[in-house]
Length: 279
Ligand code: C2E
Ligand code: CA
Ligand code: CA
Ligand code: CA
Image (cartoon, rainbow, N blue to C red; front, top):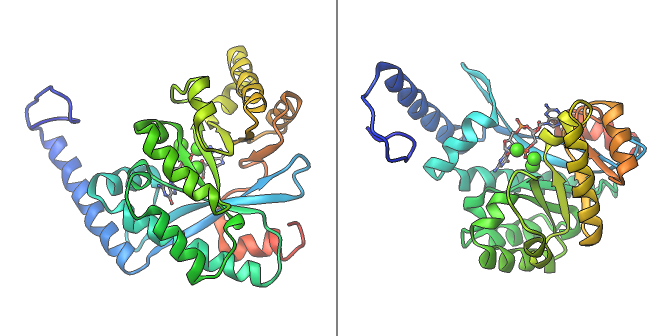
């Protein structure tokens, strides 16, 4: 049995067998969940400095299985990517976002932008731009209501192709954020050439900011780099007021994290942040 796509071979163990069975089970269940629309999309608010005005939300997929309960995205997204289910999964998420955005736009709410996570596989798939165009026209929503989050490493797979796609999307008025920024190895010159609007500082740096001296320097560097490159910058995983204050002082003006609010279902998001006039 070949392990992890590496070149090492190992003996087939019962434990591995269990893992493989588990994986196949999740794959089958996920296929059904997508087909029967058992996935839902939650929304986590994003804030400006005063934490009372939202500037948008991130759409995050949730899977509540009848018997297994909530299965975290960190378990099923990698399996979806391995099995190609990710394309249908993301089309579903994009469609759900379109549907909710349509309702919110019709109510004349200014909710900012709703961001959607796009896998590196989908970025390089021919249909991505078409899928987005379809949702824009089916639901008749503004491109300026949408944002895509694509990881730093995903963009680096194929710089030229990524840039071409990103420019098509940005031409329509969709913003592009580079997710998990700081975990890859982008150079300054690479960032300068890339068609993006925003860096999203990975939450691992935010978590350690209060404790390790080194991380505050990294965060500070990312923020000033963004400024020099004329990019917006958002911090994710902001859990404490101390973190938020530190970030504000360093010049970061956009925040997302449990401090502001957790991901919640669309109707709760509407009630909590939109109906109350917080938007
Ligand atoms: P991500 O894109 O980096 O999303 C941020 C994750 O951090 C989310 O986890 C969110 O719930 C969590 N989070 C937000 N604020 C805080 C905080 O203050 N503290 C902590 N500890 N965590 C916080 P979630 O929803 O479990 O998603 C995990 C990952 O799964 C996402 O990471 C993303 O890579 C992937 N994912 C989720 N939904 C989708 C989707 O629709 N499509 C794709 N391709 N990936 C998705
Ligand atoms: Ca994200
Ligand atoms: Ca992230
Ligand atoms: Ca992440």
